[in-house]
Amino acid sequence: MHRFFVQPEDISEGIIRISGSDYNHIYRSLRLGIGEEIIVSSGDGLDHRVEIRDFQDDAVITVIKESYRNENEPVLEVTLAQAIPKKSNMELIIQKCTELGIERIIPLNTERTIVKLEGKKQDQRRERWQKIAEEAAKQSRRGRIPLIDQFYNLRQLDSIFPEFDLVLIPWEEEKGRGLKSVLEKVNLQEKKRILIIIGPEGGFSQGEVDFVQKAGGIAVSLGPRILRTETAGFVTLTALLYQAGELGG
Image 1 (cartoon, rainbow, N blue to C red):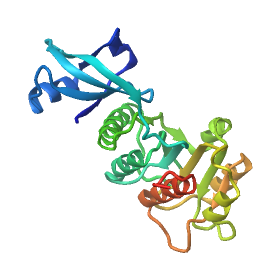
Image 2 (image 1 turned 30 degrees about the horizontal axis):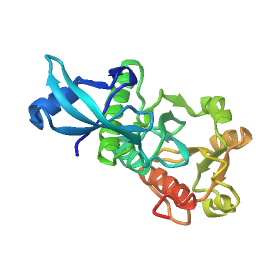
Image 3 (image 1 turned 90 degrees about the horizontal axis):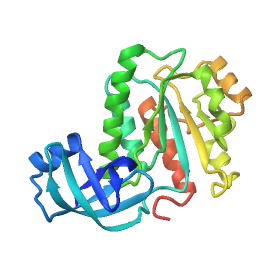
């Protein structure tokens, strides 16, 4: 069944109004008709099975037939601070991390970040990336759309560290502490809010890693092989979900 997202204000007294690009998709692309059913999520963890009742000039009017809790959201609330990679790799990262269950993605500028976006270009990219996250959330039947947050510089990140129970910074130069050993010592049923910080193609500088660790972060190794920036976030997130029993366990 086709799935769509709406804002909470689009729901009133058992009626859900779907507008914007989703209206065009339902009416013109899918050619759904009155009486057909779709799934609508309000982004708060609730799914609604609805019936199409009317097509207005700019909106599809639907009636709620059944509401139920979406069970596809992971117990962990993971944020990925991702150094902006070259080309379209950020889109791949957003798509795949959304499928896995990421909560929020922070575009990150670091000392060695090659792609530098400013002002209006940042807004344009965030808008596009948010749409990619929405489409991936629909495809993976999630109950929430991950937030594509504002751009941060690495040395601003410590301002949000208090939001998290655990801050991890995978680093290829870390030799003594592996991700596995760290996760084995953490109760992920209690420490649910986690920040992963991933560097750019050229990696983090020693000064950047020192900064994160002094602010409370933990540098970890992802093994002896050097992973690309677009791979490291997937691997870390997958390891967290596996340890928490979220991958079919």
